[in-house]
Image (cartoon, helix red, strand yellow):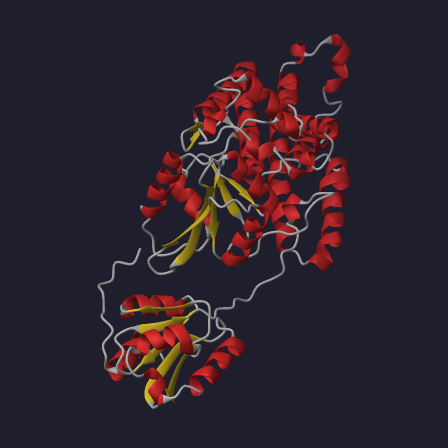
Length: 486
């Protein structure tokens, strides 16, 4: 937050101009513009950042100022300029030059008038933006195709388009001593728990850092608490409809300027396994899709270590399933094969991110030949290792939450290592520790595994099976909403 002392705007325009030129680095920064003008026989000066101002709008306002006559500004000059001579919706004034400097750097235009001890601020900002396209990671077959962008005003507008409740709150604040990043806390006042809103505001207000280079992810690391726990305690989404659905339940959302992702809090483990596609189909179809996703996700965690355990202790395999074991264990130990293929897949994923789109197909062909066919033929991997790792990889990619998919991958590696060291006890104990870890976690006081732990039958049924919307007439009890009925 800004802890600079107040610098009072003086009536001497030259002193104000000199201070702003020094603080804004006029002459050193090519994009900071200082323009001396004279209207109605009064000396004036404008300060703005090139590229953040709508030139056409500012040019139009200057035309209006050029028509102002001297006698029209007699008396209370500031009041007349604000109310009649500058025909713009977002016009204000400020008597603190330190705050004026920060406001100019956000993109607003400052107008200094000789003899007035306040600076007129004209919000004629415009930011380079892209269109609200459908997010790559949250695509749906049927549904809305708009997604959040990097401009916070556009994102809040996309949300208000879906929620026209008069108690929808968009509370603004800035974080970062140097970055002055714009933040918006969004919630529905008649639904969200006031204590939870107040707690989140206190946490955000206590953040003391010079900037937010990674936008919402930097905030996440401040509010999550346990830095080394890989499981996400907030949910990220780029879909306005997903954001609106959570706001109607009583969640709180955080918008960060410069990021197309919105943080949703508090959330449970099961929130990270939900996808808009389930609600774009009939209830029975959506329930089927959800069950398939659950099987894929939990299979990606447990199946590969379980198969490895059965190869370490063949006596655990029933006679009818004796085909499970590998026919040829290859030239290197199975554990090393699993670790190599895990690292290889992560290398491939990183390479795909950094590869231009035009070369992505070529990368896929090379990966298929190297990791698949050739690696098996030379004895580096066995066919079964490729098969079970493919199942695990599909489950990872089927996880709607990218952060949860990465966390589950680390758990899978930990299960493999524990199984290799201690066999059956290692697999059982590591799996138990994994469940206990999740059960002990909380997201802003909400148990991470709710409604499984602590158990709530009705809520767990809604989590396990996609219930019809008309039957979901109650909001999640764990959020303590002010209005529990839908």
